[in-house]
Image (tube, rainbow, N blue to C red; front, side):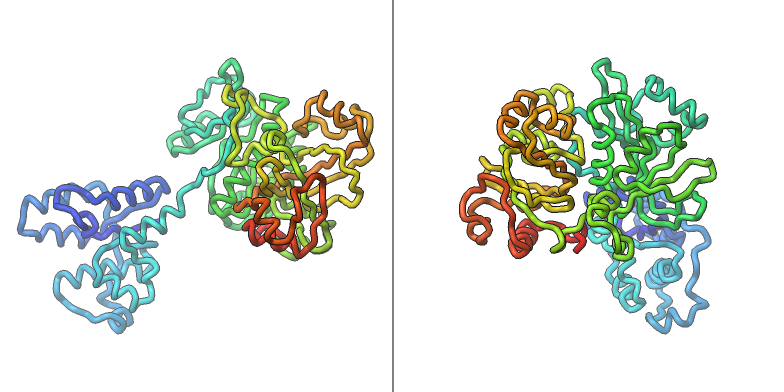
Length: 499
């Protein structure tokens, strides 16, 4: 992206000695998003005509670091341009018209200027959305910054890549597969890229996710057109047993959502019995082609088109397009009471939860890392089925907080070993707790974690809405009308719901 800077912004609201705070912020943002900043050659001529030699020197020193726009288009031979704005030969107007013409002829993407006359002319020319005041530019370009406002467990660190040790044995296998890995690593360090990294007890790297925001075509056969995407450049886990791979997928999706990006993808040389391929295809990454290096390309779409979901089984929408899901009348909705200590372990990405001591020491709660989770209780309800929605009500906090989609249900289990076989490492319950639950016929619900309500709903609010008559003691089904009320009051993002 190319941005032309009018020299008047360097003296806006300030003396001729310092740059304004807003401009400092703007230049910092433009630098972070790797924008090409340019000065029009005629702007220099205007400065050199200043009779105050000291002020002239200060101004030239401020803009000397910026390259000049090469061979800018000139408006003199464009009668259409001057049919729209008045032509004047005064030096000031001449310079302004030349600067504005570069935007009009698409030689640059944006112009930043505090000159109100230029803004008035831009309105007449119909390009005012590309001619920005400093404050407007801050708002526009700040939206291009990568947003990392996601909740990560303490055992993971979000840090610049230049802080990683390339000689760590973790990288050995990557260097074998990619001979150019060292050069690529140096390149992305200079770019200021970030990563998610986990360290083992011996301080060696246990897991690493390097990602990048892209807006370009993918090198592929068949061709894959330009689109905003998150690329998972490095996705490797050597610290097994903690469901970190699943956590990486969940966090990559969170990053995509926070940056309003509709796709996540990676490239990969497929190996026999490939664990990475098994993992990513389980969560909806689809093999769409091969690049020039003969790596397989896997893309995950977050927002399916109606034609893509037509004819699918309802739960297949969850598997293919997570975090989108079907919530229409064909699936039932249930409120599920859960104790706070179990909710805290099951949903470790809930923003208001209290971090446990083990987490503070750098250890994972494995069941909190998963997308697919397990809930166990003694409810005798038999109407829950695959695809149904479950809304978790945290009993002691007396709030409806979290949403999940049912994958499978197993009822009437009385042998604790059968329960353990069903839930694996996806439950928050210890063996002793499962043995205690299994004294009565037990219900196991396997489900996919979705949202925490942006606006948690208190018991009093739910009661006032007529959804609850008293605190829920067991799983209870609610009507479509009640779910619609929860969906609206809880501010569930309908961009992810299909009905």
